[in-house]
Length: 145
Image 1: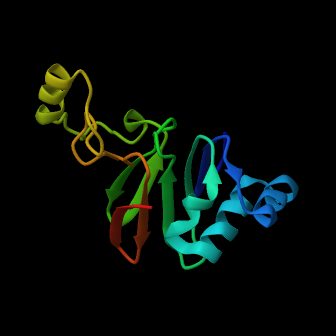
Image 2: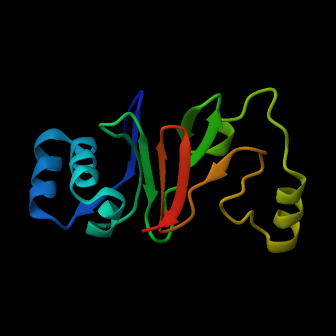
């Protein structure tokens, strides 16, 4: 796991673009993800293999997040006061005022799982498999890549 205040990279991404793979080896995975997003925008995960969950600060003060196609690694997010917070697990984003989502409890008993994007907490969401999240100027976009 590689992380800082505004970045989180989990798993073992393999960049299919030789330049990005070389950048990852030389400067780290975060630098390669940033460069990949700069080049390919929201299609950046299409040129990455392996298991990964990534959240990186973009050059325009946004946040780009993505998880691999099977969601082997998870990534959760929460919008609090115009800021996007993210973490590996939903409980890391919950605080004392966060409510339990009753529908999520029903889903758990019925499906034996809580389907994404829902989590056990209201207002805390999971990035679905094969999807990206882009948070820019207060606007949140969740879509498949």
